[in-house]
View 1 (tube, rainbow, N blue to C red):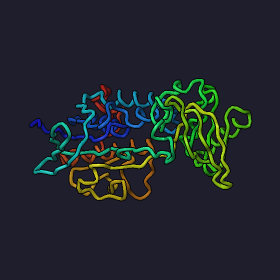
View 2 (cartoon, rainbow, N blue to C red):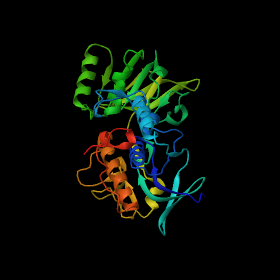
View 3 (tube, rainbow, N blue to C red):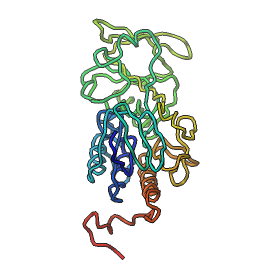
View 4 (cartoon, rainbow, N blue to C red):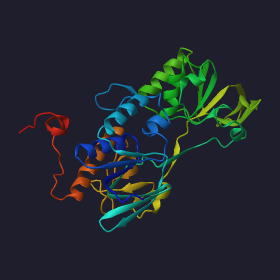
Length: 341
């Protein structure tokens, strides 16, 4: 354990955490980011780097990996300490500071901003014969798409009815040899415009949609997926189709992990916060998908605002004489611009 006490420690290196690090630097505080993943960027890098994002202000569309790289550049420009592949297991309030116990030692900090997203995201899987034997890149069964090129020229079956499933049906057309999506209901839960585009692509023969179907069994040859048995959830009729890859995009089961044992007031798998992003533990703030308050929206855009609120109030907690509002960035000396009135 280092004797040095950091002003603000951010738990989580996704877009909200990186924007929090940017604001910590903007306010002239020392900052540390701790993340369990091997790289910064959170879900943007770990789950869907090649997926386009459309709802970030000022960017009509941007690949997740490009947004992550921009966030990393912005968030690390003031030189925060970066601690990766390390999970915070305990948060212990002590006299004048907070002690964070991790897998590889302990850290002291004056305040904490938790930006852990949904926590550990465990993908929902298909509970059918053949899943375990073929799960993983080598076997051909996947729970996310990292590189579309991995599926070039293949016959791909996508299972799911949400945004990720519909987005990748559209994203893999023209790359995969065949793209078929199955869903247990006729209605899809994705954005209306995306569903309309998918149905239009199906009418042109670019993709295939089969509802209401589910996977009964996955069959393989030489440890690789070769076929799947489908069944109609209404008629119970069965059908077999040849495939070379199965992508089950069924969502994730959020798990706060050790965070749930830190004494924080929780609402299921989220942390209750005030309008100042305060938790029930003094000096501990939270922002992003991990928080709950009336009217909460789980968007990257709202995470940015929550990160700024959390950090500015953490600065005020450290020094009650410090202003909560730092002013507009165009007027700040830290960016070498003239100070405004």
